[in-house]
Image (cartoon, rainbow, N blue to C red):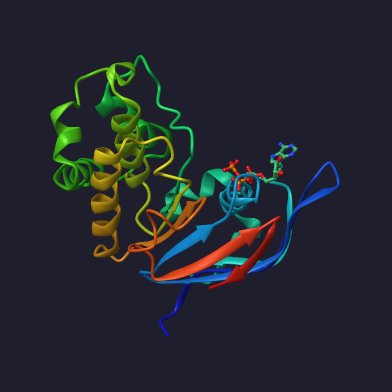
Length: 218
Ligand SMILES: Nc1ncnc2c1ncn2[C@@H]1O[C@H](COP(=O)(O)OP(=O)(O)OP(=O)(O)O)[C@@H](O)[C@H]1O
């Protein structure tokens, strides 16, 4: 098996002393797309937020490319190519599509931003087509594509996609499937969460199931 990109051992997260994630261990090899499947409230978002350093947590280890994330501040994720597409899109409505995509460039600085932007537009030409529109003028599905585009600016190592298909109309979700599928060819490692297998079954290389904060493989 190829080398591990993300490795989590015995992650526990509690909120107000209520355990949300229990002894979670998982492994995502380089270039692997892993599904994280579980019902609403199972803990998918909490797991992704933990990887982003946004939750108080306790883990034996959490490494990306062999580096322990315990000592990396939340804002240290993006420069390491770790990126997160939250379930709610969190675009800034009054900014244009392109300005939203470029937000990570302003906040963390990305050396090859222009090249990266052109690569994203070649992956999603429709986004290039509406780059000058304000985010508030887009449909929910289009906003999802823009949020994915924004996550792809820094996210060249590990991409966390939190229920990307949720609330997206069928035509756009097929398009989203295509785009996410093509990211695999870029050698990126991806965790994709979904409440069931309906969109992810054909995309993922391995599956983790999460139920009441407990993760099992397969
Ligand atoms: N800030 C919080 N305070 C209290 N409980 C929380 C908090 N955040 C999450 N939880 C609880 O933790 C559990 C896991 O929530 P989480 O959002 O991670 O689940 P999820 O699998 O992503 O589900 P969803 O699809 O509904 O977002 C839920 O029972 C939720 O109520």
